[in-house]
Image 1 (cartoon, rainbow, N blue to C red):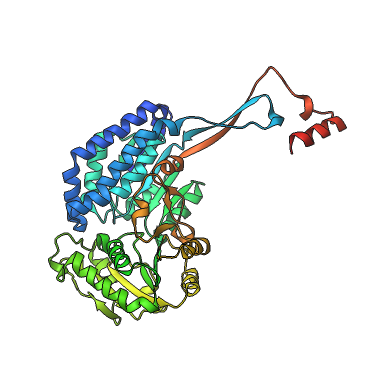
Image 2: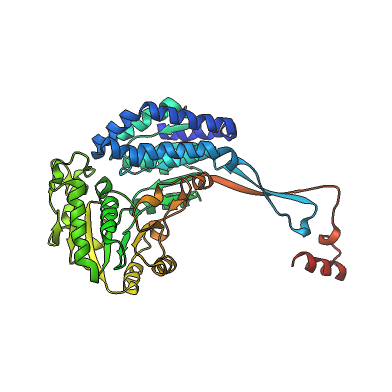
Length: 456
């Protein structure tokens, strides 16, 4: 099978040690950047065909972020590759201690469909910067973007260095049967468990970027109008098909009615009172997910939206009121443009509600109280998030992004991506001029006193 051949050729190419050189890595990143710029229009057209993304949203959330990550990696690569000195313990005198990074070898990157270009390219940038050979598996649910990715990678890299494998479940299964040195997966928790199980058979390290039900807490001290505006942006971006989208709203009951009016105002303001006519509003990826999302709204109290168009795979920005923890929509990650609203009386009630579930990938808190910020950050475990905004914490190369618990393991972006795809070797270089006798037998009381002194 071709997949077997690709994996074997990449292992052979990695053994030639060419990918470990700084110049090789830098040139690879520069070639990738130039080619993405060359195909920019084609990438945006593919994203429109797959997800209905406007060219603005395609650049803001996919192409632009990828180029920014490339620029950051190129700028800092030499510093990341340098040996890092460490203090040498007195007991090991005379010696030099340092850490050296090396690539894992061959890497498998399995990308999702919701941000099919960016979530394929960003981990690839880290893997290439770290000196690995890579097999990239784009999502079959976004076939037009998958085809462009393959075209770009085929134009930039020889297959024995970086290769794209298109296809669906059969190809995923075949790839997971190969022995890679590292696996990076972004997608659902269910598939993440399969990836982890397959990786365990070969003791292969993994990064899992999953999801979950990410809460948005709004308390009575928040700037309600601004909070509603920013929540609308984060929730309905990409028609809600974002792993870190606010999954549900926890609103303090004293300001609920006022806040809901602002929510409805901003939905109309951003998407218009007739959102089906909005050409910049993305569609649902396929009929299966359209039906799933529409079913979650059945029998619920809809105060905004709630309708769709199956032929166009369109679902209006929707708000559901009177939701409880037992409501069907609270039993799974929504991954669509539907916002359930729940209330709380005091902060402990909100914290306890979140803690009942799995640790979320993101948490968003809108408040005017610093003590509330500190308390939530201390009391609630989650992957990452924002205070008084949504989504934007992942749009930087200067901080890592990743989940915790059921929402994932490991992180990437910027230096974190380089570290994820690198193994750090700790080295002690002992000088030969002096050899302290303390560690050698015969052991004496004098040596024991010195040992206690050295190991304080």
